[in-house]
Image (cartoon, rainbow, N blue to C red):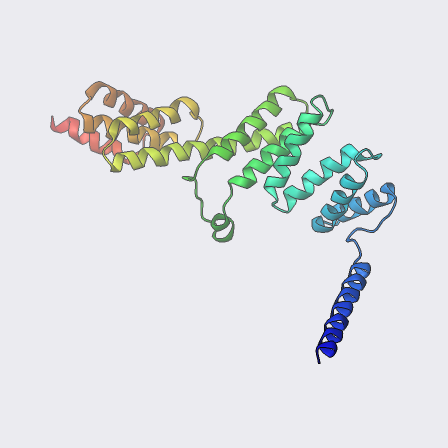
Length: 262
């Protein structure tokens, strides 16, 4: 009986081993073993057809198999773009930073700054905003700040770049987002009667983002903060600026009526 069990056990082991070996042999790599020029042509076709998953597989294979191949730099640049299009922002940022570190004088640095700015902007987006159209401008702005730095550097360092015009438009968008963040924090401070902190947030908007839509709200916060603190002259100055730039503001009628009653 023991011999039979031993034979059965041995047979099962041999079958499992054979199955494992055959399955390993039958497994084929996702990317075929082709010459690098042919693989790169396949990757370009995948990119052109917006098949970014397939493009990524091919480009990653090229990058690992032929790190010094005929298209090595372009492979890495294309891979960054493919990561970005798949919302693989961590991989895109890591690849960008690695490429810039190893190629500090590369002719496509303007593209890399542009892509890093785009990737930071993409990182700043949240699932609920994309799905339901919720504008969460009060979330942590650190990624937007990094994107702003990259776009601003691109415009300053490479003003003739083909990416400069789009970078300028994105700077305008980011400035508005950062200004509204400061505004949201200022309003939060007002509700908690932290008036000095609220006024300081309003000043940040006026000093750093004077050409954004948040200026009117910043002036309102400053007026309310100064009034709560009983500081007359700064309040009147803020009201004067509010009246000059936003004559239809809802706060003005109230303060004009208060002055008539005095």
